[in-house]
Amino acid sequence: MFKYSVYRIGLFLVAMLVLVLVGLEPLWAAVIAALFSMVTSFFLLAGPREEAARTIEAKVERSRARRAEKLADQRTDEEAEDDDLR
Image 1: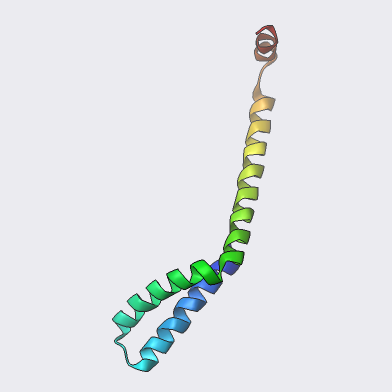
Image 2: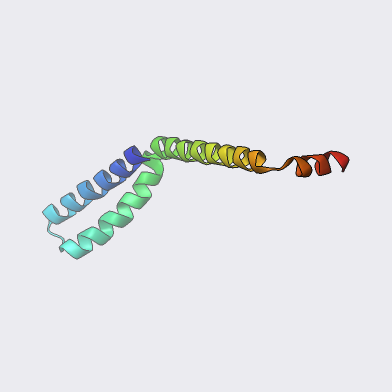
């Protein structure tokens, strides 16, 4: 996730620097650089974005597993017996 964010910020800063050096007002340079970096990062940074998504998904799955295990440990014997009778 961190690597993807750094790439996105870097892409924005490079685009902004080029636009400012060309002579655009800083505000317009920032707006155009933001739009350019959004569109460009969709195509150029697909790999790092997918890697970040897989990392987040793995963290969520581990969290769900820990939560399910914690809930299972909290069940009482009576609840387990009730479930067996159903």
